[in-house]
Image 1 (cartoon, rainbow, N blue to C red):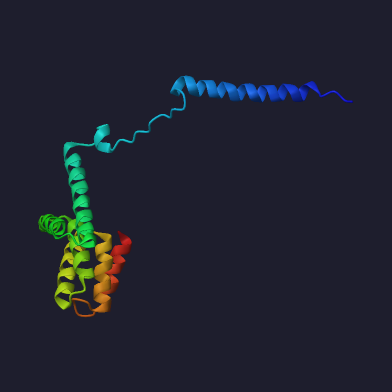
Image 2: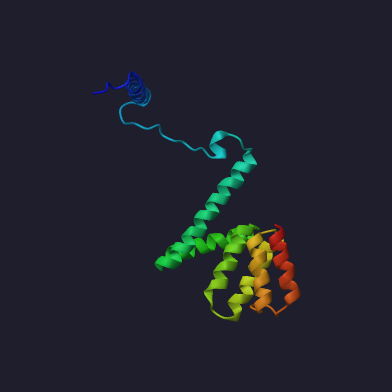
Length: 167
């Protein structure tokens, strides 16, 4: 019978000891079975923004929440949530927020209530598109191409779609 070489025995021992060393380091630094909590701070919390940027960021987040409330009010058929969110979004849209204007355009576009709603969708898309909202520009081009809410015009459709691609 052959004896096992000492080399193999030593490499196994080295591997085991490295593994045990890693385990003990983890246990000492983190405690038994614990993981370090991961924390992600927004730019606001890190302090890398000016006061104006903080206010804009907070208003963006509030608008996103309102849009989510509007969508959930439609899905759940909850009239109170829907009505309150719609009123707030309309206020923001009249105040000049492109994202709110686009949200209203989407609301009227998908309402499928007839020609009057298409006119309102075009109006809100146009206001948001003038401010540089890319999706609003694309949707406005789509409205011109299909003749929904406006007279069908291929040149205008191409113009708005190109602008959407550039932004």
